[in-house]
Amino acid sequence: MTTTVLKNDLILRAAKHEKLERPPVWMMRQAGRYLPEYQAIRSTMSFLELCKNPDKAAEVSIQPLEILGVDAIIMFSDILIPLEPMGADLSFDTGKPEFRTPIRTADQIDHLIVPKNIGERCSFVYETLDEIKKRVAGEVPVLGFAGAPWTLASYLIEGGVSKNFENIKKLMYSEPNAMHILLDKLTETIIDYLSVKIEHGADMLQLFDTWASVLSQKDYKDFALPYQQRIIASLKSRYPGTIITLYVNGVANVLDYMIDSGADVVSIDWRVNLREIREYVASYSDNATARKIAIQGNFDPCFLLGDKNFVERKTLEMLGEAGSAPGYIANLGHGILPMVPPENAKVFINTIKNFSCQNA
Ligand code: CP3
Image: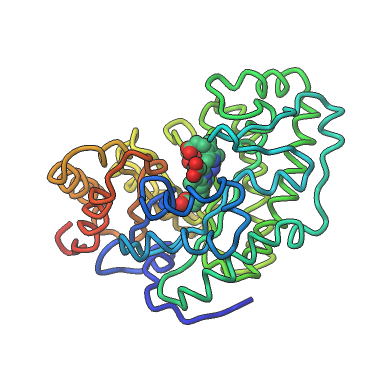
C-alpha cells in the first residue's frame, strides 16, 4: 500500500465530518464524453480498449483535475469490467454495454467463476491506478469504485441497459436461491477487486448500486442490502480506516437501508430535498452507534444544460440547502451527461470552490 501526503484532502476530511472552509466537489462520470479532450483520445480507440490502456486511461482520469479543478479524481474504468474474468462476454460495440449471452438460468450462474487472481486478470485496472497515483503525486485523492452486486446482476441478466428489469425480477421471484448464489459470487469478486484497489493506493471507494431503487423496500432488504453490507464490512475489517460511499439513483424509499449498509457517505439523487436529508442523517448520527453519515450530492445533471447564471443560481441553492454542518461533499445526483458544455461544469465547480461555509 502506498501512502502519499495529500495536498488537498478535503473530500476525506468531509467524509470524516471535519469542519471545513468549503465543501469538496467532484462529479460522477467526470472523466467522459462531455470533454473534447476525452473525445479526442476516445476517437482513436474503443471504450474497452481505452479501459485496458493504463497510459490513456490515466490521462482521461486526470483531465477533469486539469481542466475543471475538481477536488478528487475517479479512476477511469467501468463497473462492468470485473464481470469479464467471471466468464461474462462484455461488449460496448453499440456504445452501450451488452452481454451477448445474458445470464438467465441457474446452470449459467453455476458456470460463472469467482476469479482467484483478480489482480492479474484485471491488471490493467491496477496499472491505471498506479499510473494516476504517480502522475497526480498527492495533489488530490484518487477514488476507486465498483458496482454493487444487485446492479451488476441486473446488467448480466438483462443483457444490458434495462427499463423494467423484468428478467432479473423474474429470476429473483422464480428462483431466489439461484439469484442469491449469483449475488454471492458477485460479492466475493467485488471484495477482492476493491481490496486490490486499496492495495494500489485508492484513497476512498464508491460502490454504485445505481438501479437498486427499482426494488420494493422488502426486496432491497433481501437482495441488495446484505451484499452491500458484506462488501463494506469486509473491506473495513481487512483495511481499517477505509472510507466508502454508497450511491443509489433514487434514495427516497431506501435511505434507511443505505444508512444500514455501513457506508461512511451516502450519495443521493436530486429528487429528494438535501436540507431534509442532512437533518435526518444528523439526528441518526446522535444514536448509540456514534457512526456519523456524510451526504454527497445532489445536483440534477440536467441543471448543467441551462445558461451559466442558471447553473450558478442552482449551485448556490444546493449549497444553501446543504448548510454549513460538517459531512457534506458536493456532487451531481447522477453522472454528467454527454451534452453538457464544459464551461457549465466549470461554473458548477468554481461556484462551490468560491463558497465559504460561513455564508451558509
Ligand atoms: O465517473 C467517472 O468518470 C469514472 C468512470 C466511470 C464510467 N462508468 C465511464 C464510462 C464510472 C464510475 C462508471 C460507472 C458506471 N458504468 C455505472 C454506475 C454509475 C451510473 O452512472 O449509474 C453504470 C450503471 C455503468 C454502466 C455503463 N457504462 C453504461 C450504462 C454505459 C453506457 C451509457 C452511458 O451512460 O454512457 C457505460 C459506458 C461508459 N462508462 C462511458 C463512460 C465514459 C461512455 C463510453 C464512451 O466513451 O462511449
